[in-house]
Amino acid sequence: MAPLTNSFSSLLNSTYSSLDVAQQMHKHYVSGGNVIYLPDFLAEQEYGRLLSLLHRAEGVRGRVADRFSCTSLDVPQIRELFTSQEFIALIRTIIGKKIQSCTISIKRYGHRDYHLIHDSETIGARLEFQFLLMERWHTSWGGHTVYTAMQREPLLMPLRGNGFLLIQKPRAMHSFVQYINHLAEKEMMTVVEGVFA
Image (cartoon, rainbow, N blue to C red; front, side):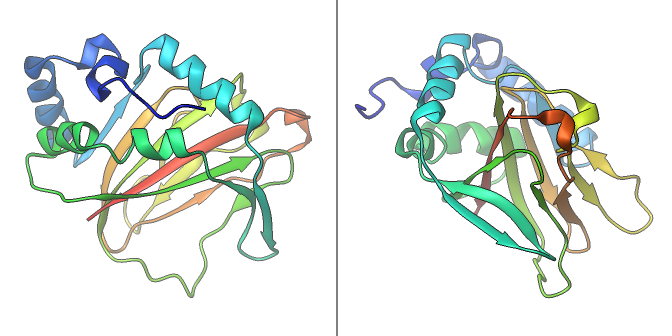
């Protein structure tokens, strides 16, 4: 598959591509406690292209019983998209601060998969994002990413394909992916996770 040749702005949903909207997103991010959720993040054609890439992607299955069960993928086109300078510039505009780079992981979840909070994982405060790709999904199947912290209501990532969540996680906040039950049958969801430096 050929690498991306279009700029990130041409792949983004046109709703989010103007400077005025980016400035509005910054205000929403700040007023929302350094969290923002953007539905229909990419243009429909680009989102469809990424789904088709995932159909052909093979991954490495991993499971540690008390920690996680999922498949790790490496899809260069997705990695390139979410590490591009234009994408990072958009994130800079939203948060109103400088950032340098983004580290990406791509994980596929299906029936019996999950990712738990583990006592040995002491992750400090950090800016991160999640982007979801799936053909269809129902909340009764499980699979929510849940952000949790003491004395705060849990924050659930909406289970909607082409949804993008950007969050500044404080030191005391942790996240996990709920167990996916048998109702999902053979349906899969893919989570692109990014951490900014």
